[in-house]
Image (cartoon, each protein chain N blue to C red):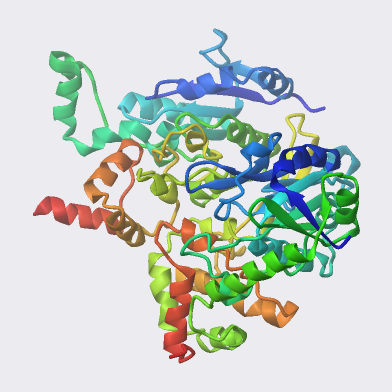
Length: 348
Length: 259
């Protein structure tokens, strides 16, 4: 059964049933406008209509603090690798965040393969959830083409009124559907409902900035010395909010943390950010990107230019988190528009 | 195993609340005591020690000639010195004194007895004697203190994070105070406290001191956008950071005061 439907009334018991696959994690409201992925035990706590969570689901794939190895200095340089895993089910992941997870998959599968990530990845079941309309004015999923599902899930839910239309993406997804009796076969009227929604979405979701997405890498290359970088650099506080909330920022630092016995300890990795002052500082005290403008430009190039060359993939998912969270109101769409104006890539 | 290092606590101008953080470590304290030989700590014991300290942990700022003489003596007797808590590392709340005329503020505090007290402008410990390690915070954050102490015992450097409190605050997925219309010093204050206050519903008061290179001009623009007056912010900053010489924003403030 590649497609199925689930009556909305069955969501509660479905979420209960999901717990046999692991801890169920879903978006919950932290305030009217703020959401976070957290463990849920009751489907009524799930925010089915939510704007992107403060942190993206990456915290479950590469936690803020993650143990990589343990050691005992009496054994010299010997390290014991550690992967801390648990089975989890991520429910309600929007298409932008599915794209983000796909980006992380690509990066951590690149050589040298990151075993901690890849092992943990296998323990995560992903159930996507379609956005029927824009979350808010910060999103740019129209420009990035991420408002429709493009894989990266075990199951994908679309809210079609009193039922969810469900696309089965993997064998694991198929098992979940087979093991829960309240799924029904998708019939032609269901497909028709879905098609109507998708047609409506195609009308709503348009490029938020009038530029050609496929020319963005070239635009960023040509705009390397553009004035916009100085502008955003002057405003940036280097708080690293934009990178911490980015679903595709994966930079980290590695530290050794000794236990109080001063003999045993663990090696951990911690999220790091190119926006932080010490990030590109080297032993001599020199920094490759001492200026905020250098760092801001680097962040944008790491989304729209460098990864396209290396992985043939944009690392901006259009989720809008960086703009939403910026105290200095450095807006991704405005920055792209300003760069496009300077470089002549803005469509008129 | 080698002999347990001799560790001692001292306090200068402070409330001794940071030392209370150690006394309150609970079971960790027992574990810690397996690794060190605690020789002086007046909050928890009455014994004294007259030998060399492997590690001296100093709370409080230096505010009198007597403080200067005493910290010099402690320094001479210590292999390693840790400045402990905001008063010791950045002057802390005691720095507020520096905004006043010394004689005037002395009379304000001690009245007619002022003549019996000698006083100096408040200084953090490292401005008087060399300091190897810093544990910022008011009070110190227990896990960071343990990290620093372990580094001191191992003789390896501890790097105080030179990034904004926002970094750890985001790790903890807190709702930003600015989005709730409340001013918070997180964006310009250095991390290391795991955004302790914000996790518990309070704003950041900047007790750890500022990041080494804050974008003061950019922050002024943020304040303007959020309708927060510079004076309000600087007053709030002065609570802990009065000892600090302000750059851009300070100049703007001074200009404003001059007019």
